[in-house]
Length: 87
Image (cartoon, rainbow, N blue to C red; front, side, top):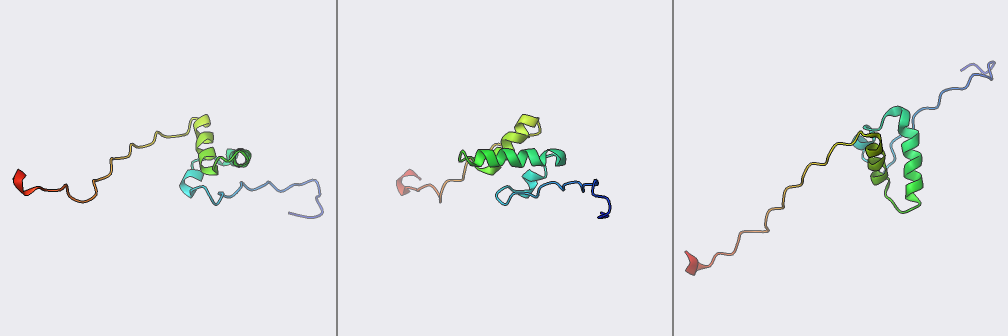
């Protein structure tokens, strides 16, 4: 940018990914709306809402969220106990 042109303002770059939000989640936020998502997360952080949940809610409001995949039930710990008299 030339200093001789004071009326020219450089465009502001989009905000970087917050450290507490996974990069793949932040990549789903449209670049034009990232400032808004960051401000929303900051407001919610003051209400003790984690930024990751704020970004998820923001994406949901935009209609860009995908349904969560169901989590499979965990495997039981160890083998079931065998009783010799049941064989």
